Length: 324
Image (cartoon, rainbow, N blue to C red; front, side, top):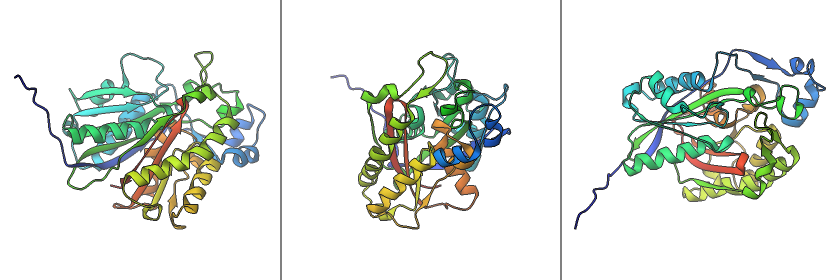
């Protein structure tokens, strides 16, 4: 009988390096208040944001992804030619073809690498990370560059205070490679498609979200999913050093952290709060928050981090990782 040979991959996978990119232009709450009925206090009280970054005309999903990806490759101690697959998570690329991954692969120097985009909105990075980990362990890839890159200002109505105060532009990236010991835990993921209409693009141009509905869902449903990711990794909440939720809203982040501490997470667990100075950058928020925390000395190599992404779809995904 004819038999098809199966590839065999690494015993385990881990994150080898991370990187991020943000536009130079800082947009404060006071600047936004000159364009719409809002003010600094109102924005801080509701979403916890003090400032965010907006990309210029020449800054794109691809260009920001190239910068973040190049930094992640350098941080991993690899060369671009060592990367054999590129995954780009995004929901804001306004041109469906060509995909961002093929362009980024070429521009970072990972020429001829396999490449594809995926769209799980704000959960996209965690979906990409899970896919990359499985690919490395299955043997279909050896080193994968996973990027979350978003230019949300392309799909936000600049006069809609329900979205314009929240969303921003950025990219974050990680290189996933082989490991003798597990560095990326099993993913806990799923969807709540019955709530898909709470975040949508009704006119095909601008994002709209039912803020209160999303807030209630995130503050009640995401903590149990995060705890499931911890359980799948064979750990307890007390083992978690760092919590990196999607940076959707500071009140949501704080609510998730509070519920995890009620279930045994330590009081000294470091909680990402990149939302304050970066805004909501969708799939870029988790890797960028990790990179900023690393640069600030708030997290260290070997720390156990719990990542949990959630957003439009409604899609969610989380896993435990060892910080590079």
